[in-house]
Length: 459
Image 1 (cartoon, rainbow, N blue to C red):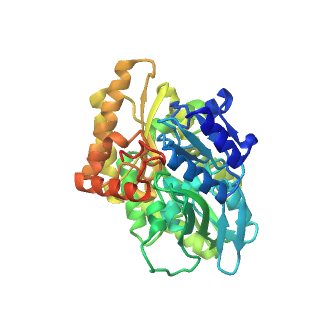
Image 2 (image 1 turned 180 degrees about the horizontal axis):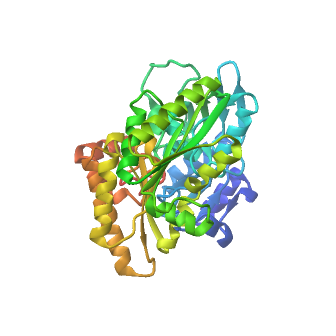
Image 3 (image 1 turned 90 degrees about the horizontal axis):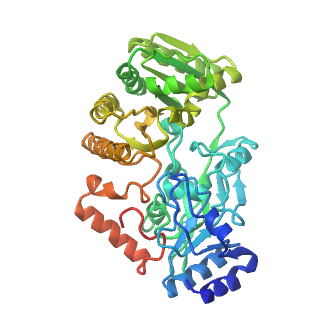
């Protein structure tokens, strides 16, 4: 970028919202991957009109532009790998525009933090279920762009299941509206569906209309302790097949249990092969009791040695502590975590985790696993010494083999983290050349000059 480019962009958004100084470029050069790719400019648009003007300018001058929310992604999706402009949407475009009680929808700008919306709608008796682990800081624009999931996905689904409409700006500056506030809409192509999980490569989302639900009146959590990971995985899909759909069904393997216990001393069963933590909700106490009893029955049928029911909010928080603190705890096994979020059909979970153990032994690396087994989404964490090139090499080989196993079992490379740059080299494992060509054709139709988040998703 030239100095004139910076001056021109300042004319669009103002001098106080366009920066090229070292401090701003450093602040916006990384995400949760810890990789660093420096932009040449950071722009903070105030509204949709300014987004349109910035995109039109960058398109005319062939300047790469990367939309960004909170930068909490794990695959490098918000990194400016070709320089150019980071379009930071969290500073000004962060308002809840409407909570429509009659139609049970919310209209929000992309910079609204997930938890901010959850709290706002719960205050009026409504409910927005998608709850990624980053819910306290990730933005809804980022959630849509990555199709974020969360612990409640087992019952309620993921972000895509709640997006009704999007307003977005195309790379040439055109403003479009995709979808409607209506429950039914089969007029035209599902453009909103294409923009969801597109990782900012097709358009810049400027407004989101989200479906809301009525907030359930009651909920209860419980934990099952199992002698082996296979027993726990069998309990997962047999519970789900029994007619009970828990809000969440989360698991930790033995390595994860030991790590949390070593770090926090919570009295966890370190001799257990795995634990399952579950939650149910409903509008009648009898409904809650029935669900918990049925889950307890299925857990014991599949080898559980203990079933612990929370009787109040504090006990529920204690049960969930291990799962919510698993990720930072497993760093006891290595300074660098190569974490992936592979997903398979639920019935394939026992086979997947058995094969991951085999990969661990083959490469001599520790691979603690935990995650959302209610929807088949497992977080695999290959732990290595980040300062040892040989260990890193072994770790990446292990990851590639795990990806191949996942695809062979009918699974996918990512359940919620997206592809970005981290998983781009593995896209050919999951898609045929014809399918990749179709993706690239869609990208070209939206963005013929390839200015919008270039280099992501192997496009």
